[in-house]
Amino acid sequence: MPTEPLSSALIRPDGAAVEWVVAQGLTGYEAAVAEMEARVARIAAGEAPERVWLVEHPPLYTAGVSAKEGDLLDAGRFPVHQTGRGGQFTYHGPGQRVAYVMLDLTQRGRDVRGFVRGLEQWLIGALAEFGVPADVREGRVGVWVERKGPGWSREDKIAAIGVKVRKWVSFHGVSLNVEPDLGHFGGIVPCGIAEHGVTSLMDLGVPASMDDADAALKASFRRVFGAVD
Image (cartoon, rainbow, N blue to C red; front, side):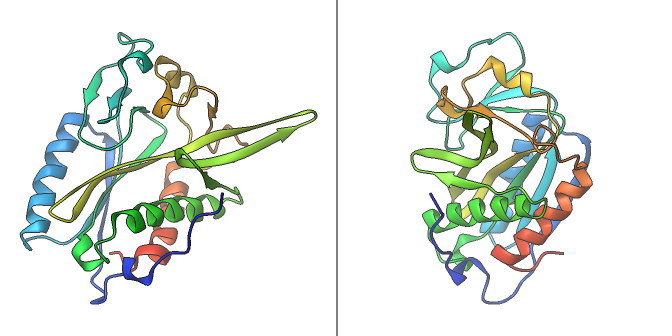
């Protein structure tokens, strides 16, 4: 199902640039949440610019507000973190780019659904930089690719979306599978969807580095949300 057209309201009318930060090494999940919480409060108070923060986490599972206990298949495999973002269970780990998106939606149309469509188009545009066609699907959160072979076809998820908005400032964000260990998704039912698989750029035959993925994300973000620095 093609995504709906985007509103130009997603780009700030004042043209202010979003701070673009890439963390080095692995970032602990609890530390990341604390940093996000503090930054969101400062953005809401007008004391700090918007930020997109790119991180990699050590292997862990997170449970969104809609997570179902039965979807945690192997509770002892990795730490499990309860989180206030939307969505269900997801996996984060090395080789997956997590982008925490802290934007002031009072400057971007105050339309949460439109904002989520923007996140979808951001990821779809980044994947297009690698020649990977992707889209969204009715009733399924995230971004999907269709895979075909002789006598078979299936749809696999390549990117996840889980956001929260407080005082019209967004946080949490998206994750893009660059080269994670896909076997680690086996400890959960990813996003509550058991009948479809999970893939990555490497799994699709695209040998992209994390730097390559970051460059594609940055280029696509500019097209959807405007200036970054």
